[in-house]
Length: 274
Length: 129
Image (cartoon, rainbow over all chains, first blue to last red; front, side, top):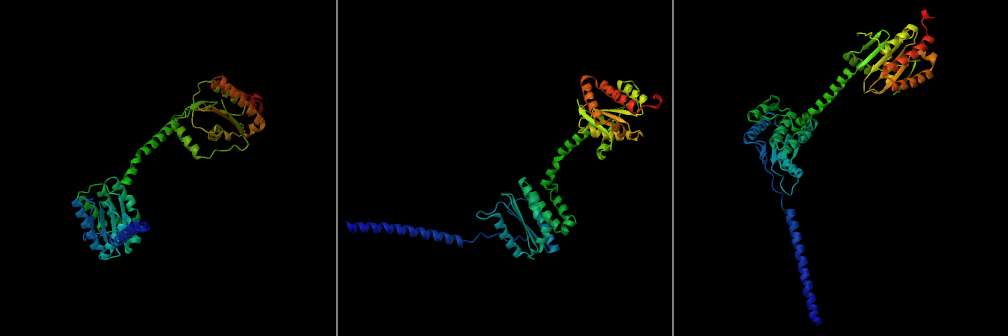
């Protein structure tokens, strides 16, 4: 009984030990696999400057943009790259992924420090503008940080990823005073490629839609002026009475508003209501 | 501006003042709705119509706003010094009662006659002495 008891205990503890060890081994091995598993490789830097993974641009527009990016590079030695993603790879954040891609592309660019890369996540409607050592101060100084806020993100939210890419890239060209932008070639080529959209970002053009506030304000002003003109005023003196002409009445009112009220030094008076 | 001489109770009262004293009374009736301070408006009008230019400094301006139902009476320094603030306070009480009980033109005429009588006593025309 006693022996059987011990055998029973031994078998149970053995099973438990085996179970725990197997769990431990599985855990350790999965951790090891996770640690050792390398992140998926990022795409290599495009020679034409554009990776349109999110299919944001029609083909003709993409080709035109590539041509313009290349021309800027050949004229200035600076590289501007554009990368659109359908979505950020899973298990990576947008910021981390774009940082990795930027590091990779910058290291392979012809003149490493002078690089600007624009990233667009079309699903999450995110945008990042990363610039290399040679251009980051210039970009920061001239409002490069606000490109995403002003151009990229609002356009993507309006479902216009093509406008987001084109207007953001155009803004980078403008900031860098690219010869391609300065001579007007950028806009001309885009028009020729069929991009006939207004070049004002959607956020700005929406603010222009507040015209009704101005109409309302103007109407109220006109009513007040009209009222003031038509307000009847009659002046009586011993020689007769006169109705103050409407226009003169208005001029008098404006003058009285501009002029400080006079003071009767020693005179007096009284006021009341009925 | 064209001055109309069509006789009204107010004009008759004003002529009475002109005839019997050296003082001058003017009346301004307005219908401006957005007015904060009738006394301030009356002061501006007093200045605007040149009532301070009277050498005797005994002019009076009565201002009435029919929209806000408020009024103000302003007197120049010589007249005010001779009658005192109590006179104007009493006048305002009577004027308020008249405005409530009769047409505004009649109330104004009564006020002007009252002021005119005082002016005739204090500042009579030489020809009437």
